[in-house]
Length: 348
Image (cartoon, rainbow, N blue to C red; front, side, top):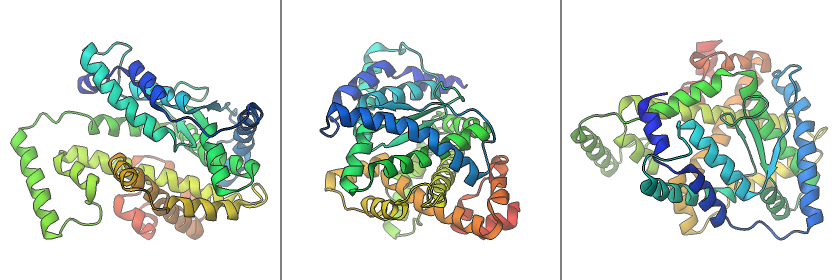
């Protein structure tokens, strides 16, 4: 772990971030104790039940033990997320500067509080769990969405678990993925230690291209601004993370649909209503926050990644598709996500 990474981690009071985020988090939907307990119990069972069909479809996981999921509320997810971010950045329980640590902690907590109402589940490869990671399921959000979509609660809970358990299988079957992600994150958060004039020059070039309308499909909005102030290694690391995220999310969406009605009877109805929800227009403030936090970019990852996985699996089958998990060199390149045949020609 680099000294810069340690500096980043020690600049935030992560415990304070978790506490602030938990305090700011909106309450979950109104529900009786019976409904909450039923959701918690059913999600725990669904996480175990999802493992077999996920392993069957992905051809990964083998006979490895099935770890238990942790069922949490929004505050629980926030505290788990802040703790994971502390581990990722090499942080400690005590920030290097208590005052600035609390300021940055409060800012981080506020962001986590905003995100917490939209997270259904998450596999955290950096948390300390039975398989090197931890599967979290946020039961208030699951209850809220299944009510909003008016779908079968049992089917929806299993459907959500299929997606998140796929992420668990991806990382547990391919341990190098977490290290690859960690290295890219380290580069992305590092200080390039370059002359400020170089950064200003890149920013000016970005503005110039924007005005000329010559900024390309991947350089719009906040993503374009990030690229403008990044060094070349940081841009490459960002591309690695974007491509990996697109592959992971698309693969999980493919698995959710591939298990079919034999496992989730109302899968098609859930998929249709969930996709409609993803495309729903948001109020202006919500749209701004979503853009700044990259929420819409993540939603794009589901669609683009699933198209990539669907195409390759349709052409060569799941066993040959799994070559993608061999090493960093077999992951798709940014242009190959849009043109899966290029990946097939290069790797297979």
